[in-house]
Length: 205
Image (cartoon, rainbow, N blue to C red; front, side):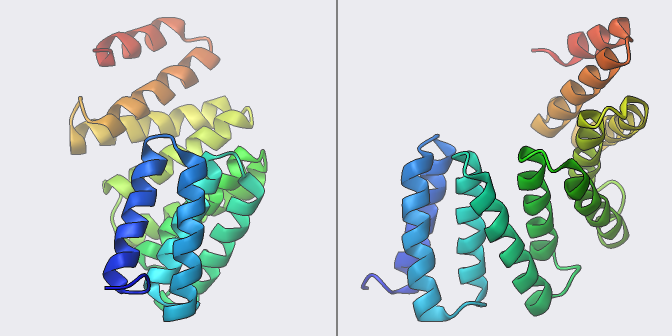
């Protein structure tokens, strides 16, 4: 097929994602860079596959600790997807969430919180309040508020997210367990150690 064939590039992207998932972040970054360069040359800057490669590279860079470059790529991808796909497209919202996550990891909490809140409002309107993507965003808002020391506000959102995850996905779903851990941490930070221990006990294997 050749190195520039769409199927070849798709395989390259899949391999890079697998490497990233296995923790081989440096190898994943290198392969994503190569795939992005080829897709940019062959397909153009704003082709959906090119934008997907740029997003994947941003995620791999974030996992590798290269947060500044990751944030730059996510910002570029967000701008392009917003222009090409619209502000409410799932891929655009995913890019917004990725950017906010990279900013959070950099300690740029106020910027991250603003983007997470904006994304939450759109996802609630477009997807509904109980959609998993909406609940993940609500959880992200709460995590940033927790990092900012706004424990009471964070606790309210963590409770809402956890209860919705349980109702939507069930007790044993990984997203539910993550929300439970975040809620327990929030309760512990507020001094409610008994309730935190109860949540941990109910959701531990």
